Image (cartoon, rainbow, N blue to C red; front, side, top):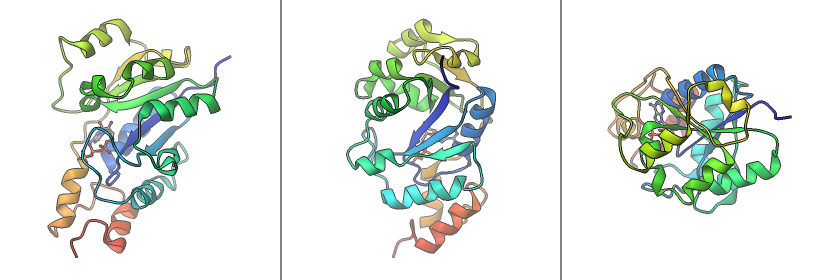
Length: 214
Ligand code: ATP
């Protein structure tokens, strides 16, 4: 008997913002997940190094969800302190939770780059992939990701509870065109990014001078 599926949202969270949090909470509701685990990476492998330290990024994620029981924080990648491969994280989670379907949540931007991820095909033996719609991204019509969608795409989002892994779901979420890059730029140039991210995170960044120069 399988347990209720759990969502997994990894990211640099440099910093976490309402785009991440709305996506997590809307998918928690629409897919009837038991919770969504937010997993800040230690060192991303597909992009530039984060500006904020792992400790600051973890503290910001914790501050963001402190009053929301549906969203939990998992520090496993930061505690591992090695380059953060999603497949390693999923293998560890699978060892600890053998009966829980996992839904790896990603934006379409992340899906488009999936074929460059370490052991990307193994990811679908460990989890489902739930793709959150975001503005300005089109699904590919040819190539490996298009083939993957042809083979794996399921129409019913609740099918994630019936198998441990292997499905791809496309799920609309409220489109919030917020990016961590833009928020960092705003802090660094003395502009005010309030209301793009939780107030507790905003206050933490100001207090700890996470993105200020000098
Ligand atoms: P950066 O601007 O530094 O690239 P980011 O805002 O895209 O950062 P990440 O931490 O890299 O944030 O993203 C983690 C995950 O959240 C990815 O799967 C990404 O697709 C998704 N995501 C990022 N921004 C949004 C948003 N505004 N709405 C929905 N999902 C988002």
